[in-house]
Image (cartoon, rainbow, N blue to C red; front, side):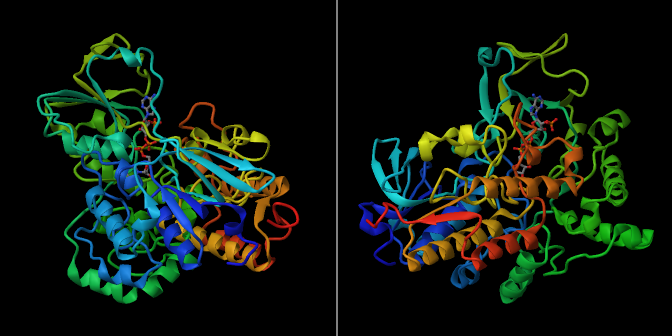
Length: 552
Ligand code: N01
């Protein structure tokens, strides 16, 4: 780093990173490699990010473990071996710990420390951060690696606090576990979290009521012990495979059917019924979310989408004996416009005598009572209530934090009408603050672990360039944010996603604007936008300066 960089300006660190998930761990390593002084703060007592916080029963990552892993270190890639095709949170946290130890990251990580506030000083161009223990810290740059699905939400049902039993949220499950045997349990929500919880606890609890509103496309995960041959093949081909993920695929993932780098091209409508069937059967057999890699026009064309939709609807119906239940549980919205749900024996659970589905399609939950949940005239008595009701995705973490940019502007204010960012990496009025894997980026579609690394690398190159040019302050213009917001809107309008309510569009949170929430243009065009910004030296869309004026 040069003299103009942050170290000379009375800071504790060049870069402060918030959050010890995979984005944060990558950031510590990269910033250190580039010669910056760095400190990462994590509210949890261990590294692992989303896998530290989400430890509900039955959780398995829905992306293949070999793919859901960091690619920036050859040593890490080669030395770590996954035990299962889809790892659970404990193994994912062990992996995060392995990364932290193997790369000697721990000396720059402070656990059990929540950053409560961050304030930008316009004169010095320095961020002042305060932790929950009152520790005060100053840095030139801040990287918010706080995750896209981190802020849990609970619908504000009437009487919520009157319930006399225990309440849990899927995203804050007690690490020591919960004994649910002999309990009458109610689960609200049947997204990825709810479905995995339901499938796992059904055999354990006395009685399970599933409060069910919208059926999802639930597909068998087909988890298994990691086949050794597959693991070896992946390790030998990681480079080629990662390149395909980054450069060619829409969503940043390609490892499917134990094959590497085979992306489907061409229209579903040009394929013969036999070809469609053969491809879909192969995906079905493979399991997991392999249906993300099918004909690309399933994302953009209703007719093409219906080809896959009908196939999966039939597969779901086949698994449910009771026709009434089959009708309730079979989704009808365009497939893939909400995230696919990876499960194990989910539909079969409804055959158990102790499991009852409460259909909320016509009549929602009226209130939570001291004894349970009331829907219309029926009160369901419960000992325990599980909220698997999701997250304030993409924007929730930063809106909840007291982050103040220029003129005391907070994210809650700046993002009130939508997520205003440039490329999902920075926001106007928040100089030198970088956002990883969240608002304005393609996070919902992409494999977050791939995207986060790309973004961290981009920030690293940017900070290096700033130092070389003897600059120390950068922020995007309001116009650049407008343009990016417009691109986000154009990109989503070209797809089928707006046809369905989902957290992708923010409409799982009452009143939340979807503007600029995410970019739906695909991995290749997102990477191109990042490259274009670099190639022109960040001029145009970004404002660059040296603070304080005239040097430190
Ligand atoms: O949350 P969700 P999630 N009354 O928003 C229901 C990732 N993830 O935590 O669809 C009744 O998907 C709501 O109903 P509806 C993954 O990306 C990954 O399950 O709005 N019900 C829905 O059923 C995933 O997509 C993994 O009609 C209400 C549920 O709550 C994302 O996280 C595991 C309600 C919320 O589903 C979020 O998943 C877990 C109300 N008032 C999560 N309000 C893996 O890798 C909400 N609901 C495996």
